[in-house]
Image (cartoon, rainbow, N blue to C red; front, side):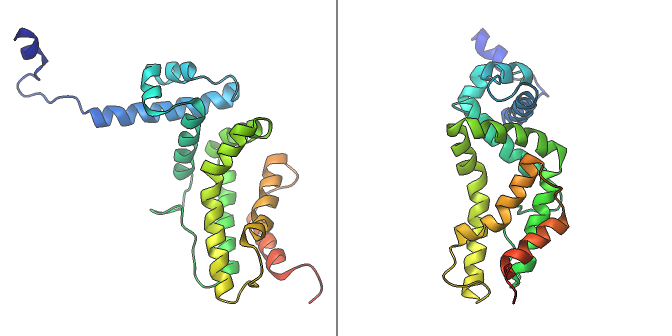
Length: 213
């Protein structure tokens, strides 16, 4: 009975808010994982290191995630949401104003903003570089981080086909690479500056072609 009494909150006091404590721990783990992958690289980032940096037990991490890859994927998705300054309440939607060129330019400009945000750029480069040499991680990056965005491009391009703005025989999955791949290459390999002017030009070239009209 004594043990049971001591476990009760004292009069006038409230029991700890476990939901708030869990969210605080989760946020600390996200921040620790992203910081470590930047400082040490993906191979040297460990669950133990993330736990120590976050000030939590590694059992806490394993209760929520099965591997460091899963931690980093979720941390990165969270970072992407926080790094979209003008995304509004629904950052992962593709506008459909009826003007495919305008909609593509708007989304690509937002992508430029994200890629130039230091909070996003540094850990993103670390993960992308590791994904090149680590095939399993690379596939996970595509499946969990890139594919949802690519699907939005596909859906929007199909709507443009139905509206007669894009040829019906075009494969949207291939077509989206005209916009996404050149931007990713410039950003990853520093082959040139990324800017609104650059992505606007990508859209114009892709939609109107290179041959004389």
